[in-house]
Amino acid sequence: MNSQSIVWALAAAQTLLFILAAPLLAGWVKRIKCHQQNRAAPAVWQPYRDLTKLLKKNMVLAGNASWLFRAVPYIIFGATLLAAAAVPLIAVHLPTSAIADVIVLVGFFALARFFTALAALDIGTAFGGMGASREMTVAALAEPAMLMAVFTLAMTAHSTNLSVAIETVLQAGLVLRPSFLFALLALAMVAVAECGRIPVDNPATHLELTMLHEAMILEYSGRHLALIEWAAQIKLMIYAVLIIDFFLPWGIASEFSTGALIVGVVAATAKLMLLAMLLVVWETVLAKMRLFRVPQFLGFAFMLALLGMLTNVVLETGG
Amino acid sequence: MALSSLSLYSQAIILFAALVLFSSFVMLAQTRMVPLIFTFAWQGLLMAVATVLVAIVSNHKHLYISAALTVALKVGLIPWVLYRLSVRLDMNYDTEVIKHPSLLLLGGAGLVIFSYFIALPIVHLSGLATRNTIAVSIAVELLGMLIMSVRRTAMAQVIGFMSMENGLFFAAVVSTYGMPLIVELGVAFDVMVASILFGVFFFHLRDSFDSLDVSHLNLLSEANEPAPLAETAVATTPGEHT
Image (spheres, rainbow over the protein chains, first blue to last red):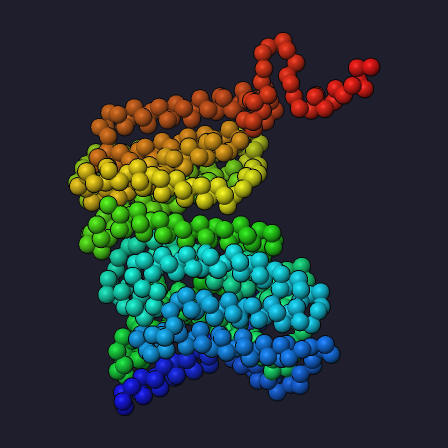
């Protein structure tokens, strides 16, 4: 019973760490991006300052905002929180990751996105509707690609549970799997689209021609906005951790000793920092796409995921 | 056969086979001329690396010569000739409109599944470690054929043809550890001659049609007869004759 409660406490601590570290990751991305582009960089903890400032501020609500508009930030944050709880960051086989598998994770994101779009429509401004329609277009194309990539990985691990998949990869050691390569590329492309990063969306601008995510949350202010921004940062971190978990799980703690957990934290930090650097390079060399090219981009991601699945059948298990 | 039970070299062969397949898909989706030529060169390079790996695994020395030939011809000479041609014909910035790009890619995926089922009996017969890649080489051939049949510009069709030849070569390497060297030399020479002939053919096409769009060939008819062009049919409305 005692060990059970310790394990649950560990799971809670990991989730808390996840949530608290997400703005730090966003700050780190911002910082190296500024360095890359020869701009003066804000401090790494600038996102924390922004969040506390927003949390302290008064809210301005539209006169015709319904209860839904006020409930949605909490729903988004709650769904993202649950998703974060299901993803192993520093240790596998925690009880929270046994409850939810990857498909549930995709479901949480879909739930959050659905309510964001609803809230965007609720106020009735033109921007909200436009953003919602664009976001749903992107989501409808990104989700199949994401699921297909996840299924490719699940076929190798024979399970959609993240902990089991990580364990399988860890035990197999170094195996050159072409299907993993394709799934990695597909997942990276989907992550870029879902987190609203540069070739698909630009989170730093409020330019009406290009906005996707920002157009939907334009009417939010104060702590509502803080929650939504924070959820977006957690989402970016979840995708980064997912990529790390599937493709580079080495270092993650598979037992609950102090040493293994410390190694897990250090490994996760180092890998996240590296991945953020790759993201920055990707965002710096690429230009924002036209909205009408996004379906082609995501179609290619789907193609990659499908190819991953086919190579899994044809090359890895076939014969 | 489980992948993890193979040696790292064999795993690398399979990885490179998958990358060759991927480069075929990139060629299928690539609409611009110069990147298309570069992708073709990349496919040649990936295949050469796979050939070297097969040579290491199987200890067949003559495969090194095949790999060197592949690098020299398919990574060096042919892409260079095609690139020079596209510059001379002033088409290196051209893009081609593919009507349904996603549908085309899904069709390509269908071809991969088809070739998997085609290759199954061969795979059951073969005892080589690389036997699973036979399906991939058949798929590369079929994808080359798909490029030839859906693309309209002559240059893209030529690249489709060349990548079909790539698939053939790859099939030979992975299924039987290479053709006899004399056959391979002959095929390499053929391909080289073909690439030069294609150059001549391109210039004739452009002189006759002012374009390399092969769909113009559909409008050809007997000599001394006015071509039944769609435009002239529209132009010769009844009002013109009266």
